[in-house]
Image (tube, rainbow, N blue to C red; front, side):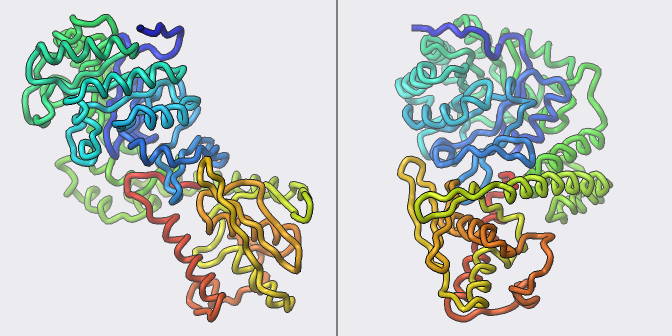
Length: 487
């Protein structure tokens, strides 16, 4: 039975930014909206990884972040794109697909299932183009999603070897109740250098009543904004989805465009700075825009850059970068002040506060646990004792620290054992009025300068604390180069 959607995102007569791995992160999506795209798709995100994420409201960036247990931000979105962003997932399991869809449901306009990616990272799990050989699974996934969420569900496919097979598949997909189907007019074995099979897109568009979104025209058919409408007419589709043409110059969405590439790159970089995009992802996208100019003086400077600050300097945006950093720090300080003013709650023999450990608020080699340990030694108390519990439904952690026979705990749950212990230490230090080592805090003398510089070696349990601290710093700073950093 086809489900009728009342309101919500329309896929008829739209131009969309296609899902592109390592490209479709928040800065590129906002850039496409700036230039006139009607709908923007995020990059394909794998269901297994997303199902482990925790939804976190990032009050510093004004975003909603979906954060993995290792602290990587897998998906970041904001209010501006909420009614126009489509979350695309890679999945081969109906139940897991629904878990992920319900996780993001309140923050996106629609969910899409990738059924066309031919690359191994997607197909090896039976996802992407591998689903094309299993129509029954396609139907099962889409039906589960359509019946399970309140927002539109779509999918993106590649064509099959014959017109009849392509038409049969899109007809089966339509019967699941999806809001639209995007058709990339190439076989799963074909690559961008191969010609587009417009006849398959035309046949699919004629065969169903739901919107068909034509994809794959960037190489030959769409070079400027005026080409988009020509591609729509030639394909017979309701709408058009652009990948590489938009990646190379997102102002292709602008009527009267395109803008000079330098202006587009600067606009993109400003979004990347504003939303703390991971430097390696930012660099990757800018290099894709440069294309054959990647060996130019600017390209070489960009390739040598390792941080967002260095990328900003390459484009002459160091003042803008610093201005944004100052604004974000003001917000952090304000939020920290509000947190510190919160009254502790005593429940039984445990004193609690709603505190979350934010790694970026502390120098690389310093943590609240270290300060609490030093303070305990200074006061000739026993070493702090940490007890850990794990919540079964989302595998989050909460720690209780005992100091001088008194217990302290954060009411918030953390994604790792180490961060849970740090949060407990913060609660203890704040209740006791002891410095915790945050950046900008006046030197308390609890930790000597050699330790502040990360050059000291501790012995016994203290050495283990330093090792754990470095592990946490590495974990927070590493992450996949395609993902954004968490504030």
